[in-house]
View 1 (cartoon, one colour):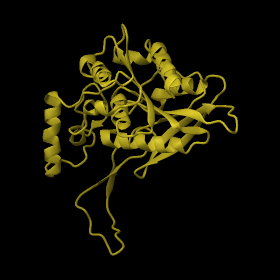
View 2 (tube, rainbow, N blue to C red):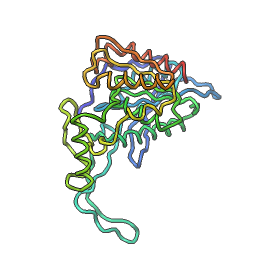
View 3 (cartoon, rainbow, N blue to C red):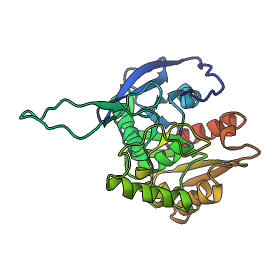
View 4 (cartoon, one colour):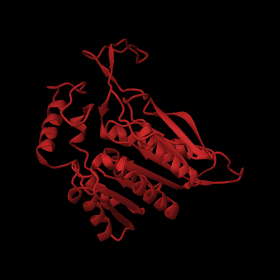
Length: 300
């Protein structure tokens, strides 16, 4: 698997980066922490966790993380489990072995790689927030989350269930996933998985022709961030691409903004014109990153 190439990070002056490991459900996640190089001993700074999308990794968000850190925040990027430098869930090969009196057994396992499991991704994002809470100089009352693409939907779902999140910014988010032929196929796959007629955890099966990796359809059948939008209470920024082709705005970003506005939640919906989905990282980077920075500076 080759990580998508984005414009390189030019580290801002006064920002340092440190490689770290987040542990989530026993799986090590490859992570980087960005912080101002000089922090007063008694300072308590706002902090942001950044969540990449399908096929991405911690480097997807590095330019954003460094930008936020240059403005006086502590930021954390990480790679979701089974992708690139992060560890993997283990899948038992064959029948479950008999355990001994110490609840131990010998078994053959397979490392599952490049799996898109939305509920594992939300658990990993919760763990990243846990990790950030333990960083020196982090003000735990001022935590934010940034998410992009599929990770935008994960960020929405996680923020809806984690009251530590005080500000949220997502771009080109995949929010509405619970409808259409793919959803119906996923529901059938979930039934077959539960009944044991298909492999419990898929491996190397790519049913998305435009995306690498393996979608865990049995869990995707139950993952619909749009149904959780009404739970959001923190100020939320949503940025869409003007020529979005993967997650149509009327069903995703714009619809989420409409729900929040109707509920009286502070929300800002912006569209970067003349770019497609992946254009948000290229021509759309400057307006998108600056809008997110302004948002976190205002609400954290």
